[in-house]
Length: 323
Image (cartoon, rainbow, N blue to C red; front, side, top):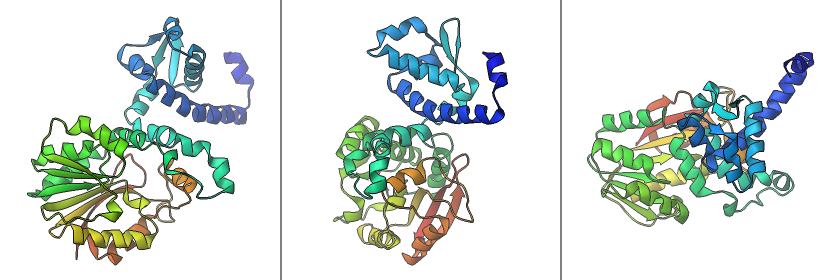
């Protein structure tokens, strides 16, 4: 096999590697879903003989072969093992799971959406899968930054996470600074997932609501947080109106912590893999860096701190204060 590969041109090898890596993304999501990834990582490999115990061993075998071909896994003496590259990759598995699992139905409709823009449905997004993948997304790089920011802010009142997802980050933050938390989440399936994270921390309440259509007033909320949600409040006019409404619903708000990804621009010619693509499928172009800052300014918020998150392209944390 080695001699055959040596006869291939460099262009052919790069072409095949490109295809292999694309398919490997899907294969890795599949074996993570059935628990094989955890077995290979924590039990020093998986014996080929165990594949027959799965309902579709042919698919599992094909997925593993794809991963071996992409050098994500290795195969020796009938044992599948994980490579060093894969170990590094799985430390931030959420980056992969978000687009390929959370948005899998949307991706499957891309040709239909090309001819019929905005024909996608809310059910095309697996919101619980997105929320669960978001736990791993930024676990090593973003979460320490958030904890440091909140510890520096020293909140005394309630922290409100707008679009809280599973509330995992809210729990982590509230425990660290010993304050109560309020999570507001629209999707009932995601709220169901959140119960496992808040059950041992009684200081957090989760309510079901659309954060762009809030009716209540919460005077106890001192600091708000919006993680990976603000870019979906589009167009810019709607984003400005939303930020202005925050001041009405939280009259004692001291500041707002916004975590978000921005689209590419001339000043920031990079992308977060999958971010622009899944939003293009939804018929929208997310705000770039300059547009995001402009929305803050027009909503009468001042940026008092900005942190660019390492190892997460185009991802920022802003602390903004009402002016």
